[in-house]
Image 1 (cartoon, rainbow, N blue to C red):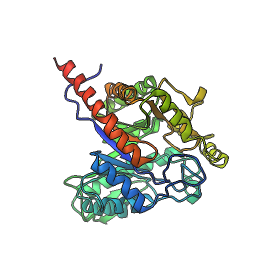
Image 2 (cartoon, helix red, strand yellow):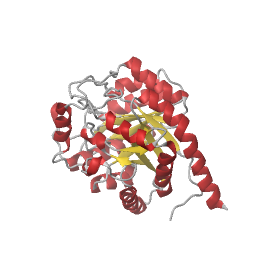
Image 3 (cartoon, rainbow, N blue to C red):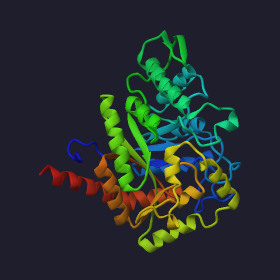
Image 4 (cartoon, rainbow, N blue to C red):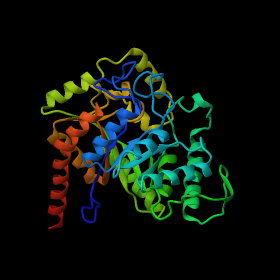
Length: 374
C-alpha cells in the first residue's frame, strides 16, 4: 500500500551530457561538443531553474555518438562545474577499482569542500560491456560488486573516523591512513542502481538512494517490491530514484514525431557499436532497456528508441506535459521520491521541463498528499 504521509518533498534533477548534445542522437559527431563552456551552460541553466542536482555519468568511450567522438572526463569536469555554480548538487558516477581508495576519499573530501558540501556519489560496479575491458579491467560481474561494497565501506570509515585509519579488506587495505579535508559532518550520499541479485543485495546494505532506469510501470513495481524486501532484511529504510529522458511537446502527435526525429539521422556505425555493448551483456537492467517492441513502444507513453544509439538508459516518456505528468505521478505513487530527467538538447529541454512539466507535477503530488491526509 502506498504511503503518502511523511514522504519527503520530491527532488527533480537534470543531466550533464558528457558525450555531447544536440537535436539528433546517434550521429558520428555531436552537434554540440561536450566542452567546459557548453556543459557550464547546461549546469547553470539547471541551477537557475531550481533543479536539485545534476547526474554526471562515467565511461571510457562515447556512449551516444561514435565511440571516438569527444567525451568529457567525469571527475575533472564535475570539479570545474562545481566551481562555477553555487547551489545545485552534483551526483558523480564513480567506478571502484580505477583509483586508489585512499586517494579517492581525499579527492571526494576536497571536492566536497570546494563545492560547499554539494556532491553525492553514484557507484557504478557493473559497467558497459567492453568499456572497462578497453582499459585493461577484466574482473567479472560478481567481483565488481564485492569490490564496490568494500569501496563504500572503506570510504565511510575514512570519512567518519579520525586518523590514523586501518582497514583490512579483500580489495582495499589501509594502514594508518588519513583523509583531509574530511566530509564527516555532511558526507556525500551513495546512490546505487541495478536490478541483478548482486545489485539489489549491495543496494540494500549500502545505498542511501537506489536509482533505477525507467521501465513499464508494472516492471518498476516488481523491482521496488524486491528492493523493499531486501532493505527490510538489512533493517534499513529505502529511498528510491528514477532516471528517464523526456520528449515533450504541446500535442501527442508532435511529441512522437520529435522522438522519431531524434534518432532519424543515426549512423549505422553508431548503431552497430551500441548493439555490441548490449549483445551478451550480463547487466539485467541494460537488457531491459533494449528490449524489442513494435516502434520501440513499451507502453502508451514509454519509448525505448534511444537504446538503438545510447548506452545505459535508453528509454523516454513521450507525450504532452499533462500526459507525462500523469505518468510520473504513477511512479511517485509507487514510492519514487527523486527523478533524474533529461532531454535533447539539454539546455532548451531543461527550460521546457522546468516551465511546463514540473509545476504541474508538484501540484499533482501535493494534491495527492492533501487528498489522502483528509
